[in-house]
Image 1: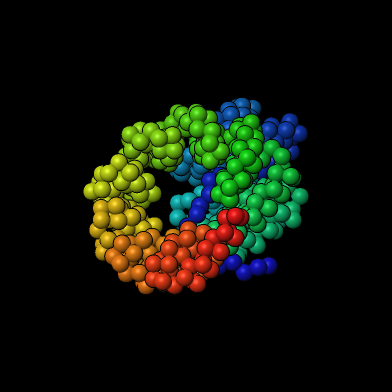
Image 2: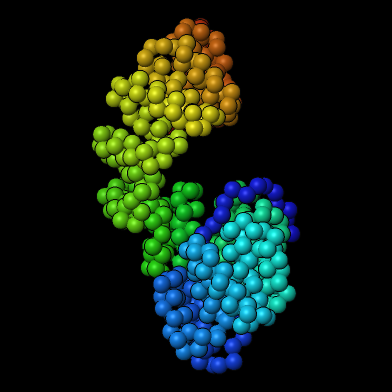
Length: 438
């Protein structure tokens, strides 16, 4: 098993599973009702429908332990911790051998920060139901919350070896690949497996769509988001992600329609206004875009990207002081925001303040020396200051980082020619021809 390192920064929402685990029940009709409850809880993810089913079952027989377990699990998801705890206690009193009840209660303790109790219950759940994938999944979630990533990974893998293994385990393995190994394609592979084995696992389509967006597979992302919607997912980030995919495919009207759905579901979501601002900006509706970014910032004042994008729009309007104010605000939130320093440098360049521009580019490079465009931007203002040799050196650094940087070769050829270095200029122009296919 690979060794995974890192610190916790991501806690995922409740996932779903299509082959539910329930404790042994003596009555066949009750077993059938519990299976419906479990399926609706894990797969359909309709908690209100689950509560109705539980009420019907308890009206018929108020001694069914798993009914209280599932109701306690729903109350946990709803952050109704006191009544959740009461239901889990009732379930365990009715069936002291219920691994499901202990396992589910472990998640409650973890949510409440009682990690010793969470570990005890998670271990007890595995001890009582060692053939259940759910109990290993829940113990893995406890380890994950504790930052014990390798142990969590092992439990998620073990859950896959059980007959009732939960697709949330595949989702969590996907999340770990992404969060700790930075491997989006490996993360997608786990989601592919989840979807192949559990075709009704709507959340996996949603997550795969999100990852496909990140790597530029926008058509595949749309297909995933559409399938997630068809399977009943109503996560506002589903529509937000689909809107982003539409926008990246230049289908702005469809993007805006999806953003309207997000607004209906979660009108206080700053990501909604930020992404709608991007679309308005792409459409040339500058005032509307600025208004959207302003609302995003009002809802989430620590939103550096919103400050940066609004600053760029202000700069394009010639409002340089407002632009610089927004870049400063972005840096106040995120001091190592190298790209914001580049935008400051570009703004100073527009203002004719070339020394300040070079200083800003130097800061961007000191934070992240791997970005070729920072060196290119600096070269422009070094040339404006008639520091030609330094400008050439800066362009050379840009080309070293990106040997196919056509604009850098073009600019360096001009500077070489101005310095009388005709052979070097000719070599750069030859490289420009190669890159441009001329």
